Image (cartoon, rainbow, N blue to C red; front, side, top):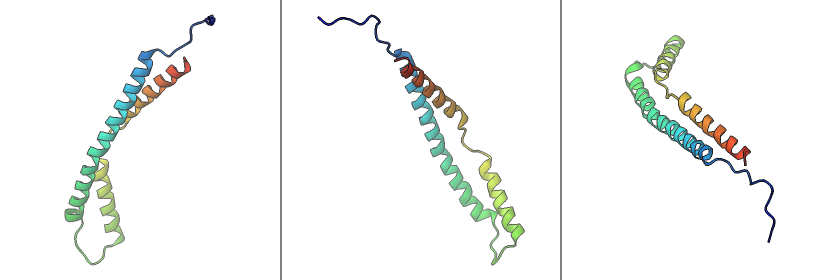
Length: 104
C-alpha cells in the first residue's frame, strides 16, 4: 500500500476561484455591452452632425474646419461608456484567481 504524504495537498479554496471567474465574466460582459450600446450613439451623432452641423459650401476656411471638428469632438465626448467599474471588477477577479492559483 502506498504511503500517504505528511501534509495534505494544498488546493485553492473554491470560493476564490468561483468569485474570480464570476467577477471576470461580469466585468467583461458589462464592458462589452457598454461598448456595443455606445457605438450606435456615436453613429447617430455622426450622421446628425454631418447633415445639420456643417453648412454646405464649395470650400471651407481653416477656422471653419477646426470649429466643426471641435464641435463634433465635444458632442462625442459628452457621453463615453463608463469603463472604470467593469475594469475594477475584472482586476479583482484576476487577483482572486491569481491568489487561488498561488495557494495550490
